[in-house]
Image (cartoon, rainbow, N blue to C red; front, side, top):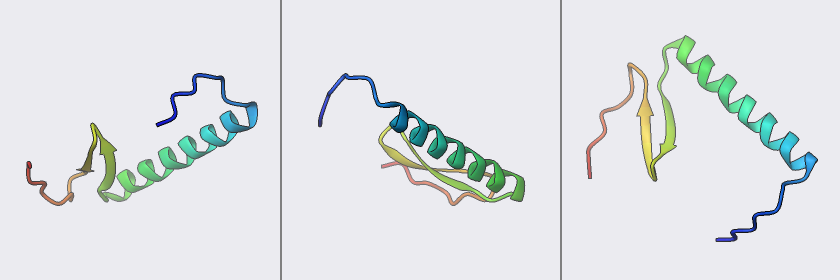
Length: 58
């Protein structure tokens, strides 16, 4: 993995912020519709929401 610690360009920051906002909007939309979401947390796939499938612990 590349551990380059230079500052991202302004363009990269704009793109990243746009992607974060788009993802946030979709997660909120699914929440309002009562649908579950699939996320990546702590190096694992996580299903969140009232209708989410049950997850088995491995």
